Image (cartoon, rainbow, N blue to C red; front, side, top):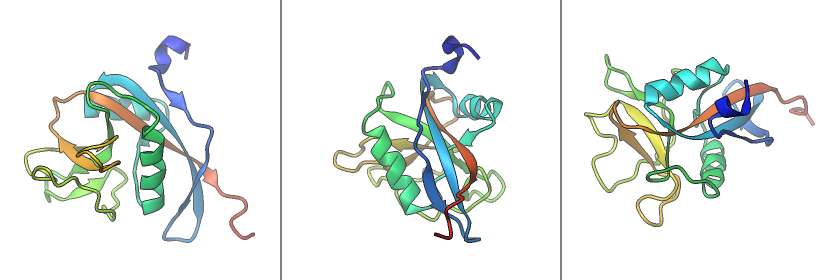
Amino acid sequence: MDLVNVYALIILGVDLLLSRTDGERLCSCYTFSKKQWSWSDARGSCKANNKILAVMESEQEWQFITNEIQNKTSKPNNEWFIGLEKNSTTNRWTWINGKSVTIDKWHKEVNNPDPDDSYGMIHKEYPKGFKGSLSTARGYLQRGWICEEETGIDQYQNE
């Protein structure tokens, strides 16, 4: 893959240790795309690079991503797609890995999550003063996105 195809992804060399319910801790690396694509196309881009749209299963992971986007821009509104979607059968919001949403970071300015929307995104700051709020979007909207790659089990978990 040449630099033109990197889509202005910023690769973080930071490993975030995530606690899992099974007791293992995984390291994740994130890439942030400034390119403006639909949620479905963004998901496909992550998949083509052996990643998934970012899933935030803990407060710590949400905080890490929220802190990272404070130093980034994504036109037009500093919003990025994440791996949050509404199940069309149950109408419940879940992460694309099938896990339930356990953090409540929905912004309250409008009806969120919106029952007419299908996909989720994270905001740099919206409404004013609320950093890292989540909201929903329709399929035609185009935004930047955040991919996540689990890089392996933390070898120092028992120290």
